[in-house]
Amino acid sequence: MSEEALDAALRLVRAQTALVRRFDARLGGLHGVSLADFTLLLRLAQAPGARMRRVDLAEALGLTASGVTRGLAPLERIGLVTREPDARDARVAYAALTGTGRRRLTEMLATARETAAEIFAAPDWAPADLARLTALLTRLGGTGLKGP
Amino acid sequence: MSEEALDAALRLVRAQTALVRRFDARLGGLHGVSLADFTLLLRLAQAPGARMRRVDLAEALGLTASGVTRGLAPLERIGLVTREPDARDARVAYAALTGTGRRRLTEMLATARETAAEIFAAPDWAPADLARLTALLTRLGGTGLKGP
DNA sequence: GCCGACTCCTTGAGTGCTCAAGTTTAGGCC
DNA sequence: GGCCTAAACTTGAGCACTCAAGGAGTCGGC
Image (cartoon, rainbow over all chains, first blue to last red; front, side, top):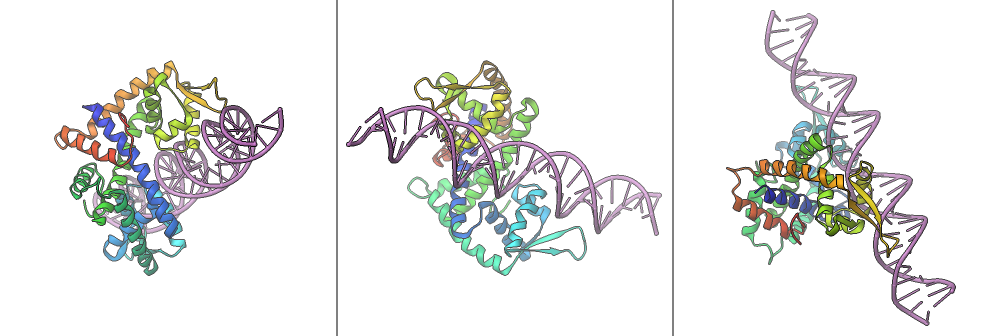
């Protein structure tokens, strides 16, 4: 029993590295961003007002606050994200998607969807398989694209 | 369709970071190794003669040759792995598990199995779910613990 | 109204990987 | 036998993240 569990865990880790490499190659080549960058932007876009506190962003992405600070820096530098203060609490600094950010993101999104579609292409993958996989992964504490 | 595929991919990435963190904490705390170290040792142990060419190890682990060199170095330093030359081809340097390595690995393996069992514990996870997950992940090019 | 504990965020140091370039060895070809 | 290409590995530089420590701000209790 635990042998099967370990096998599943190790396979998951292995599958992820392959998957990340593929997304990084496509997104990097076409848009100059990494999968991590893309995920970050996507999360922002999904948030109400396209802005989030950095600490919540960290939680949502499975990073530390430190990781978010460092990941956001280059995106701010190239103008996809801005820093916005909170009127009520001077400790918090929101990260907000800019207009350019939003525009660029929709382009990236198309590439990302294509890439994902290629990876899960028929005939190996039926829609039902995909749904099952998503359901199983969701149980693993991974908060995905759509919801908790 | 591609939206679901992207969602699955992102959930997988997210699930992996949680999973790795958990394994790292347990393995690091009890045995002073990371999940990456453990996986490397496990692969070696599975190979005939408990030794592998570094380039094959890289392939099996989803790393570059460079990553293997750097990952192996500390394990050689603490005596879990040795470097063995090939009699026929002076370019290749095998990595081989030492006796201590083998012994330490069985301890780590127990911890890893426990951790995996906790993660996939009932009642959320039925054995059939686990099998399904493994099967789906296998299709993703992730060569796991047991097979091709 | 101020103290202490807590929260949000950043920064320095360190780790674990990557890519690109270089070294050494093997082996086919003439 | 002497090249030339290719393979196996290492190394330097760089990047993305972590942890630990610290600065700045908030808020409840008194």
